[in-house]
Image (cartoon, rainbow, N blue to C red; front, side, top):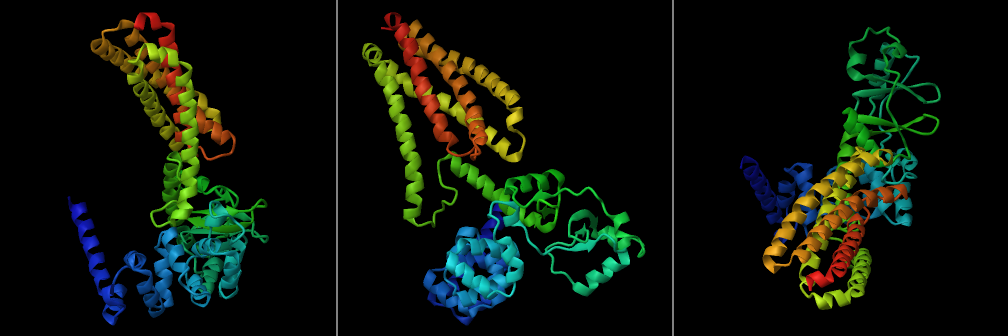
Length: 453
C-alpha cells in the first residue's frame, strides 16, 4: 500500500508539473520543470504536445536537454531528437554518454548523422564506436574509462589520475594495458589507494580479466555482468586491445530491451513496436504474422476437411475439437516461454537440450494423463459414450505431449538456424498443436466411428 501511495504522489507531482504548460511555456512553467529530477523532466517533456515542446526546447539549457535525452526511452528520445536542428543537437550529444550519442546517431538518417557528427566536439571519441551495431558489446560500450600502464608504480598511477582527471563513467575498475594497449589486468580503486606508493602495478593487478569481444551480442554482456556481479566489463578486439567498457547501467537497459523483445516476438510483434509508432510502420509486421497464422489455420482446416465424413457422422466431435487443440497449445506455450527465457539467460544451450526435452515430456505426459482422464470422465458424463470419451482423453494426452515437445524443439531449431528463439515461436507452436490436435482426435474417432456413432 505504501508503494502504491508513493507512486500516486509521484504521478500527481508530474501532473502538477504539466499544468503550467497548458497555456504555453511561461517562466513559471520553466521554473517548475527545472525543479524536477531529470528523469521526471524527461517524462514531462515526452508528454507535451509537439507545438509546446517546440517552444520549450530552445528555452532550456544544452545541459538540461542532454540530461533529458539520457533519461528518455529510445522511441521517445528519437521523437524529440527529430525536433532539434543539427546545430542544436550536436552540442547536446557532446554532453551525453558516448554510447547514448552513438545510439542516437544510428537512429538518424545517414546524411544528418554525418552532419551532426561533423559538428560534435567529441567526434573523435564517438566515431570509433559507430561501426558496431546497437545490439553488440561494441554498440553498448563507452570509450570513457581509466587505464593504467603495467610498468607504472602505484605512485605514478595516482599522479596520472590527478593530472588527467579522466571523465570515466566509473572508476572502481582500473584496467591495466601494455604498450600496445592490450588488456593485461585489472586493479580496483580501493587497492590502488591503500597500496604502498612504490608497489608495481603488475604486482597489484589481477591478471585474469573477464572481457567480451566487441562483436559479442549484448545478451552475452548481460549474462556475464549478472553472473559475476560486475559493475563494468571491458570490451576488447581480436588482438585483445582494450576498446571500451560496458557499465552496469547500460546493461540494465539491455535487460529491459531483451525481455521486451522476447515478449513481443513470442506474440508475433516487431521489436520496435510501441503505442506511439506510426500506424503504417506497425501494420506490416503484424500483418505478416497474421498471414502466417491464417496459413496455419488453413492447414488445420485441411486436416478437418480430410475427416469430414467422420464429423458428419458424429457431430459431437466438433464440440471438443477446439478444447483439445487449445489445451495442447496452452501446454506448449508454457514450455516455449520457459525455454526461450532460459535460453536468453544462458541456462539452456543446444548441447544441454536433451535433459530439458526429457523433463518437459515427463511433465507433459503427467499433465496429459491427469487432464485426459478428467476430460474423458466429463465427456462420458455429458454424452454417455465410452468410445467418445476414450478418443477425447487419448487425443488430449497426445496433443499435450506434442505441445511440450514443440515448445522445446521450435526455439532450439530457431537457435540452430541462428535466428532468435523467440521469433514467432508462439505462431509456429500453434500450427503444430492445431494440426496435430485435430489429426489425433479425428483420426482416432475415424478408427472407432462405429462405436461412437
